[in-house]
Image (tube, rainbow, N blue to C red; front, top):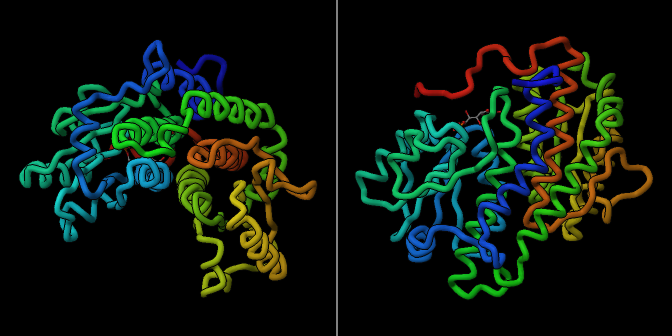
Length: 360
Ligand code: F6R
């Protein structure tokens, strides 16, 4: 049950530090070595390209995991929208390896692609929260998310668990192929810092609520902007806001806004900027913030500590860049939650949606 929580979503948001620690326990042995099934490491190690197939939030988690996977496995990672690839499979590489990312393991759109890759004899891995689920049974291999049951329709802890689980996979494959960054990446330590960073953000719920309550209680639209990893988080942040608050929201690559979409910025349009500590892009995102401020946008900044100033609204403890999407998404989950709450909506059961989508 949800205990003292008003909604499952808030309970599941709060469970995320524990999920991070549990994944560290379950994907390492007593000596601290990463324990991903050798058969998975071998099969993936032989591939020339990784394809991640997913829908919705799981698709966004795939994007958030692309950087760590590409860096440590030294293989290109391509994302596929499940409902598209079922009928419009693009030209594949010579030795593809498919990863099906799915909280429920039952998403019909993803299964449609898995049926095709099985026909083609392509090796596959399902990363899912549900042991024995359809996608798990039908793929060559399975990795579990160990996030515990996710009841709220809006997915939160499954998204962060997916990024963590794929980081363990990236570390394991990278080590097996002798990648130096993989050997140097102390994932258990870094995930413990992530858990602490999440806890610090969760202890500031009232601050986050106060920043968005007025702003998002009667707006019709909003934007999330960011670059690099923050762009991927902005896609997830906007999906979450849309599905439970019914505010039309776009996650946008910050630099792309000026190529047309900035026309939508008016007096008071909420723009939430995500700025993690990436020196290559942080200043550029700041520039894009100034552009929308000049057009009347009401901006909220969510910034990693090392990149932050006293002017910023929500400050997040720094974590390893491979994992920053996990800690950066937390305030956006809370923003969606409070926006929905302040609009008097059923946070856990938004209209038109079901927890697992078993139709194509
Ligand atoms: C968003 C949400 C959906 C699911 C999507 C995929 O909060 O819940 O977008 O993420 O339907 O579901 P799974 O991961 O079960 O395949």
